Length: 377
Image (cartoon, rainbow, N blue to C red; front, side):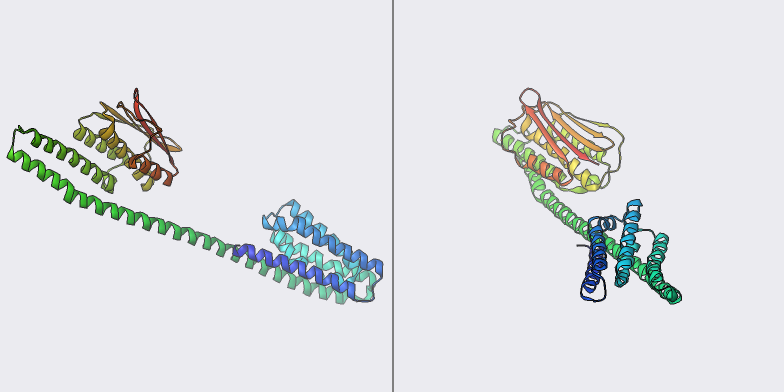
């Protein structure tokens, strides 16, 4: 329960306790005719029922409207009936005034407080016309005190709502800081792994290729030629891993440019032409969305090079007002969609889910493979 909700519950509890205390006093105090006591108790019961069924909902919605005004006027009529029947009901003023200030605007609330304090004066005037002067003095003091209490109640409720808002914003800020810290940690670890792969595996494969070609420049020995081909393939794999792990691609280029660079690198390493088409109006996307889109493009290109045997690959990056869509198509051999997904596709799905994206895969032997990723913006 928020602080503001807690404050409302306290005022409702105060209203209920006050009404019940006055009702009990009417029952146990002597000197009132039974029918008057019954009328007063009925009016108080109606006030409590009206508050529980209508007024508290209007207060919770902060509905300062016609319904709230009519509810208050009905409460004041019932209040007047109770006082007319049993003057002891005047003590209900302590419950009525806070409700008035919670249901209508301040100026109207002040006017209704004056009306509420004049009700006992009118009832007492009927019973004792000679005490009008003192009744008016008491009413003036009660009105002033009631207005001060009402304004204090409004100030307290507003401060509670402001504190609740600040607490909500603080919790959201903490969650955002935690998310950014996690993403920074993940990015740092990916950068470290990319550096390790570049400095060890990639350089190792390059050295193997250089040494073998130095020993047999023409690669006449089939075993040495196979070793060079294998080393080159693994060098390409390690470079693809470095490109996928390192966030540098988006540090000095826009997303379309980074996608074009990945396609150009794919063509250079695989010898397969890869075209890139950009549609729509390019817009600024959150970094995490751009990273997911770039990683999806790189992973789709890696899959096309490793498994598809494609002759051509086409990439589409489409910007729309409410979303951005990446489509990667190849004309390779495809794969059965019922087969278990490898780390590549499962990784793409996991990253897509983190930004509320939808990944769709279509593949068959006749048309190749199409990978589509759509992310709302």
